Image (cartoon, rainbow over all chains, first blue to last red; front, side):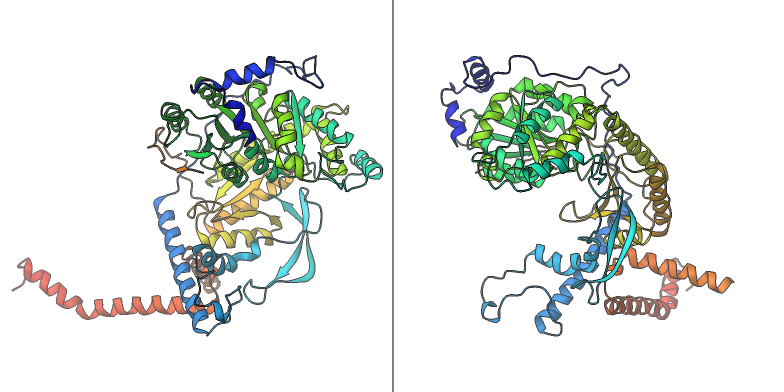
Length: 555
Length: 68
């Protein structure tokens, strides 16, 4: 990787990477210099103090629930083996892909646990995912009715639509997934002027003026020097981390990081060490060990240590411990990569993300990353930070150089969404939405806790996972909710640990109180009917210091 | 009426049993197999208990020297 060459002049001491950075920023640079400081909005009224972060709750279920979960999985797995036997013997037709007769003696392709799980467990309840939607994913939407005649191996649409289903699954935190003609005037204008396709990469002929406008706006919104936007959120992570770190660097990544971060880390070739979720003692121990022992065999100093965390973790709804991580980062001279995919626009008094929520200066975080998919109703991602960082990424990131540029109407949608949140367009609509989201989140979470469900995560996060645990209840819950005209997303293995299947609600600012009340009432009834109210109002005690994980992936 | 209510209650209990044992996910013929296996095993246990209970009780009483 080109990046690592810059550090060859490093004298081998572990503390020299920040000195290197200082040196570069003082030297003369070509190009555009931003003389004046970034225009920031005012501090706001004194009412919105940076909130002290409440504790994340990860309540444990009663013992019998764990036992029944394992028993349920055991029974279904036994029947899975029985059905596989019938398929192998020939009593039953195999609907899934199979090897050809001539290849039966070769290495088996479909015998690992993933394929077994897919054939025998996932397919049985497959009708709860990939439901076709035929309207925009606003607070209510229309679902096409779909039935299966052969137990979910094939589906057919009946032609009817289930209308006005309350949407509790879309990432529509600020309600920007709307088709209101007045709000979308600028987007229509932009489409008329630029068309829809860009037909080039940013590096060649695809750098439109709207892209530059967007990046300046994103930088201003976040309060940092500079930003760059990419066409796809997943690709922002997976293609930019390899540009930032390489062989000889260390990545300390949280246990529950998203696949895009893990993929980016693996592609980069750096050594990856995983610390327990949100556990600062574990992280500090790893930092100390990394700096004391250096690289595995040679014991040279690490070229860079990058801590990768997310703002809100999408499966748990827990918030990052940002002030502690910043303190650790400064103490051990590491870098921080903060993925605010779910938290930008959704937390913080004015919607600026976790940095604002904790009252932290966004310039302290080295790499701020986020996506436009969740709170801005568009597609794509951004990386923001110091000007040198972003300029470097413009020429060294795979996504910037090879991927097609963002489409103009999408860019305009993001611009209008950010302007709305910032209040630049002259209305208070954006701020109203941010406040509405906070209120909806608090209302839903407190009511669900009162009812006795086990909810994970921080009280301020709009991602609300409701634990279901038992495999039978996962399918029953989703189907019953759809019958009551509420669309939910249920998640099981492998996205979550096998014993912790859950339903994940995404609160939106566009949900009205009546909709939330209807959802709560249905959940109440369903909770009694299916027996989901496991909470004993006792949060589990998570001991602060764990044995260090010896999970180390060498390149 | 009472029979209707009892039937509803029983059917709710059966539904709970299906959910908890994950039989809810299985096809009807698989449920039949599992239920018949369960009933067979339970029947055998009850039958064995019925046949051997007097013997066991006599042995216990003999051990505690209640009866000679």
